[in-house]
Image (cartoon, rainbow, N blue to C red; front, side, top):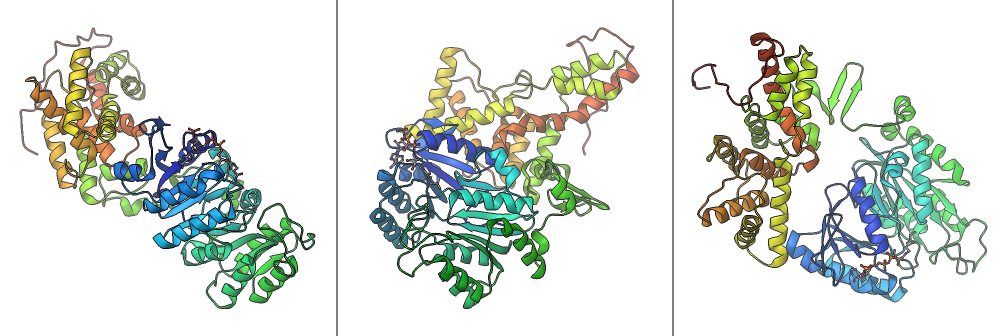
Length: 572
Ligand SMILES: CC(C)(COP(=O)(O)OP(=O)(O)OC[C@H]1O[C@@H](n2cnc3c(N)ncnc32)[C@H](O)[C@@H]1OP(=O)(O)O)[C@@H](O)C(=O)NCCC(=O)NCCS
């Protein structure tokens, strides 16, 4: 597990339209952070990287629902008002990246946070990362490097707390090199007045069941390390603590890089911190280079080596999060394959492998229905004609089926994704313009009719009441997805009503219905066409085999003049 941030948390970026905010929002999204909105006064109604931007945090919350974490890339002078705005709008955790935030402002933010039961990290923080899950702030840099440097906790990891931004990353990197997995890395920030301090974060790690030990990069100044020592002594932190304290050579009155790293009189000295931690039972290393080995030793000694990587894992030069193979063991997304076999259907398995999670039984049944609905659509679709044409040349089954699959593209099957996007845009547009879905749909249909464009996912060249669509929506309702609860279905129904009101009804077709359902199930649009390919493959295999057994090679395939001669209608 992880603390403060993971892939489920809904993240807002304040200052998303600014230089750093935009660049970091991209990196956060690439790493997997669920960035759901941005906010910059005066820029509401725009989008950045497909993320909707609002004028205020409150407007964002009203439009898209609760926000768990807000990360602020706004300049120091506006941090106080922006942070308090987020806290007052109900955001539970605020991450303040800017440096040079006035101490009085940090104190005002602390008062507001306390009054509203919120927490904040920083100011002057590089942020928080939970490796393999999500990042907020600037920690780890490019998503690719962050993935390579920090080894995700699986099942557990060590928690890193750092008072230095650069050394937060370095500590994570060197622990990774030593084969240590990480649950989360928190840079508490370098200022004198902070939100979550080092001991607060240690308590978070203490209560995280998937954190095995706590690694600290401390430094001179403040009483954060001494307070951590008190927590260890009093038994509130029981997990092993391994620490390095920077600034050994600094003399009293010298500032050690950060505003908070200053020795005043005898307070906050290197020696005092080391002695307090050692007396409390922590392992303190004298040189930063010894930190990884001391961590590995401590984990082994304290029987917490679950977060140490195996030799094979350490030697790996790339990783995959899909299936783990070991002698006599196959685990898909963490589930033993034998435990899935005979228990879940193919739809649930497809959901598991593509979304990473097992659906409940009703959603599994809906996924099954989606796959069944697209298994075949007779001899006319381009993929079938392509597969049969290649099959007729004597090609291997794989080549002929691949030819069919290759023809599944933007205009064949692509309406699934296009329709899902259209419905999402419609819902966003209605919200932004303060109109009902029906009003926005009527406007969209009018625009479409006047421009002569076609709406993807609506209408069918053969069916005007497609049996597949009707059944899919029935099963969706059984799985809890209906107009009241599922935004894409609601938008689809509004478009249907808008077409009906013009006197020329145009119902949603099976592609459109699948797009709406997959979007409401939270599957990534990148896989929609893939789901269609998975569904259609058995149909293509059947056509290729039939072509090669019934027909003569190299026949001229008439795309239209064909008839069905299979079994008469029957009940399953
Ligand atoms: C925070 C920081 C990164 C912002 O820098 P920047 O991205 O170059 O600043 P910009 O002016 O381009 O962008 C700030 C944006 O915030 C917006 N903004 C200002 N007040 C805002 C508010 N209350 N709510 C939302 N957005 C706000 C601005 O309008 C601007 O967006 P715009 O350019 O679209 O108008 C910079 O001030 C900073 O502190 N850098 C140091 C960070 C650091 O090193 N931290 C410590 C790590 S160890």
